[in-house]
Amino acid sequence: METESEPYVRLATLRQLHRVVADLNTARSLADTLQTVVDGIVVGLGYELACVNLVRPDGDLVVAAFAGDPAAEALITGRVGSRASWERRLTMGECWDGLRFIPHTEGWVLLEDDVPQWHTDGPDPRFEDEWHPEDRLYAPMYASGGELLGVISVDRPRNGRRPGAWGREALQMYAFQAAIAISNARLRANMQRALVRLEREQQALRASEESFRQAFEYAPSGMAIAEMGGDQHGRLLRTNDALCRLLGRPASVLRRYSFSDLVHPEDIGTLLRTSAEGGRAELRLGRRDGTYVWVSLRNSVVADAADGPRFLLTHVEDIEERKRHELQLAHRASHDSLTGLPNSAELRARLGARLCRRPQSARASAIEALDAAYEGREVHGGHEGHEVRAEAGGAGEHGFQPDGPDRYTASDPFDFPGAPTAPTDGPYDHHVHTVAPAADVDDGTKGLAVLFCDLDGFKSINDRFGHHTGDAVLIEVARRLTTGVRDGDTVARLGGDEFVVLADGLGAADAADLAVRLRNAIIPPIRVDGRAVRVGASFGIGWASCGMSADEVLRSADQRMYIEKRSRSKAHRRAG
Image (cartoon, rainbow, N blue to C red):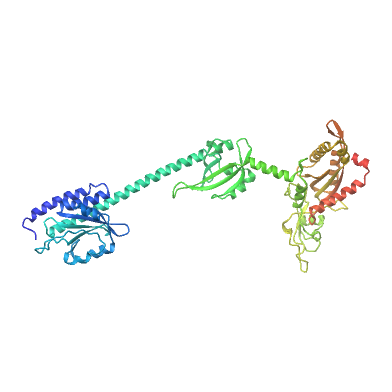
């Protein structure tokens, strides 16, 4: 029970409480704050022992600070009590407002639980409010949201008595201030850790940016960063020195362009089809001198920040040498090594590209095809009631140039009731069919002429003067044939001294005139190593037509060539 000097006790206790609470706010870390809490209880509130049991992230409580007895401090500091045991203690005994007092008469049941504890022996109390060594007094500390932060445990009041009303209120007030100090210390610790982590992240970001800058600037191949989205989509924002050297343009000039401004017109479709994320493409980019260079583009998308704008990072690799090598290999595979003309395989490929396996019976005559084109009526193309359309087109797939409406397309010739099943191995409906002029009369039809040329007298030159002279003759003949045809026509060496000319858009008379011109171009003497030699030429004219194979077309022209050759004497052959 309190004495009449209670006002003086209260005043002295308030001064002590104010002093120790002030000390709580001077601690710089969470560990210092916890130690200040227990030291303040021993120094300012009149208890010989005090400890703070702090709630861990897993919910259990650990003895985080101890004051009053070094032996006890060494024994129990760092030990852990389960949350369940602590909740049991905070519901036992007597509730002194915000405190929990468990007298020794009830606390004996707690001697075997897992909460760390320290007790000293002593005599039994002689009067009612005397403190017993096994009495327990706890002051829970709560955060502002009601969450348990920890529990202050005190023991052995210096006056040997259980605290009165004023002592209890002082301990409760101190526990409240201690909870605030611990929360602030945790907040400061979290902020310090966040600042350290932020600084490390910023350092890592700066290091990453510097690494990227060096990798970008000093990369041996071209690199570019372009905008994504918006009105300026694709505009180059940044280029490295390698790309500037490759394109022959300074970085300040390249920032005015996008890749679509620099790409070769034939490759614009390839560029537009290239995906932004992980897209790859091989195309040509324009250089400052007007030439184009083959490059390989590889795209990736990078973000400036978590929710910042996205940019397109493009790696540009110079593949000019590889492309040149590939083209050389392709050229060697498809061209004659001696004359540089397309070889037999390439000739058959070009010829086969103009042919389909459309049955011969499905073809209408050229006159009917022209009438159908200009009058829009149906014609009889082997069967009645099938629409045939004449088309006047530009260059064919391989550069053949027609002079007039020489080709037509026909719908499926077997598409009528009771007709036999049409072949299924050729897409006839969407193919521009190749037709041959009439054999007996020049009706004005234009077609794909196949001129088969065999040199006369070449074997004797080869035998007499050797292969060196023979090769020179073949090279010159190839040159003269190439000079004598149009740009879109094909001159190929079939093998030995045999050549083939493909000339599209010719009528029967045109083909005959072309054969005469080419024969006359071959006849003049050819000078080899100061020696003049002469060869003649025999020409056979065949016509390509859908429904025939390339071999059949060449065989037809070959047969006509032999007929023409046999019809002339040897003297006339050499004379042309």
